[in-house]
Amino acid sequence: MKISETIDEVKKELSSDEQMLASAFKIEKLYKKHKFKLFTVVGLAVAYFGGTAIIESIEQGKRESANSALLTLETDENNSKALETLKTDNPALFELFTYQEALKNGDTTQLQSLSSSQNPIIADIASYHLSVIKNEEAESKLYDDVAKIYNASLEIKAGKISEAKDELELIGEESPAYSIAKLIKHYTIKGK
Image (cartoon, rainbow, N blue to C red; front, side, top):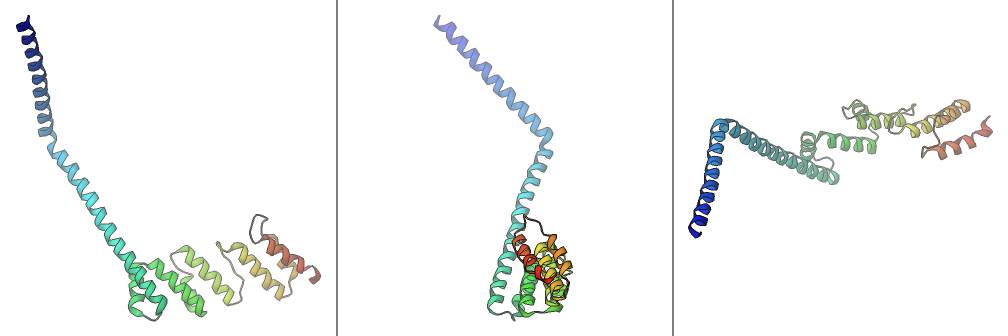
């Protein structure tokens, strides 16, 4: 019995070795058939991840350079090298710095230039502040309710109380500026 059991075990081992060898041949055949595609996919993956890492590294360097230039400009706003670095490395941050400086100095030409910016936020707030500096009626998407209050104040100064009230009526109750509009409407009662 021992010999027959041993023979059965040997047959089982040979059978499993045979299956493993057959699997290896199938894998080799599959590899030979698709090795170009496999190398292409691996190469593209390596190129993608490598390229992404390189681009991210370059962008990080630009961000650090722009931040350093901004810190320099906060202490020395006339530093032309830092201003140029900020302009080339981060144009949006350059526009924001320019807006801040124009507002601080009341520079209407710079605000006029920024009001046509590609950045819609900078363009909106620059045109709003330009209108305020020039004492003109203001429009703004970001400062919508504040602009309505400002426009109402211009109407009140011009003696147009009913137009001012109409402007203040456009401010909804959910707005943070509603209480200010309500207060202004209250103080214009005796203006009738």
